[in-house]
Length: 141
Image (tube, rainbow, N blue to C red; front, side):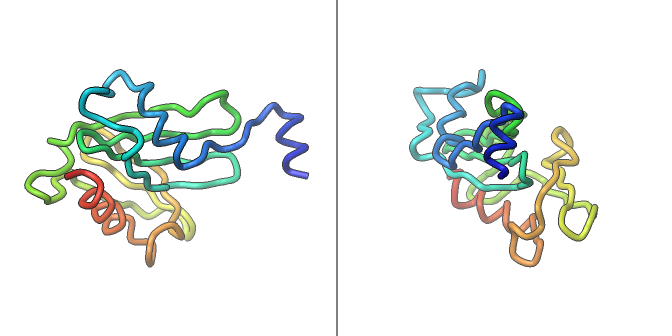
């Protein structure tokens, strides 16, 4: 029934993990000489029946992409260069969580990108900080 409702409302399907990674080419900050969407890593940060928020990391940059099925295409919310995310293999980006509800929380990525929703169940014991830090250590080298 949800498919019929979505069709009637003009909603589309969510983009796949691979399509989200490929979507970084639409960013004004994407550098095709240094970044390869095919090797980009993705982390699902937030998820509802209508929205998903993804972190996408390349060797050079971290992107935040919102995929809302009520919109024609995903939207690149922001991106940060590698120098603001990791240095010498350590995460230098300050990641601060805030309580919200039993199912969701808010997380700041530095002082520039504050109060992003995250789904607690997507992270072990709801620990978004450790989950994102581990993702960044593996993804951006």
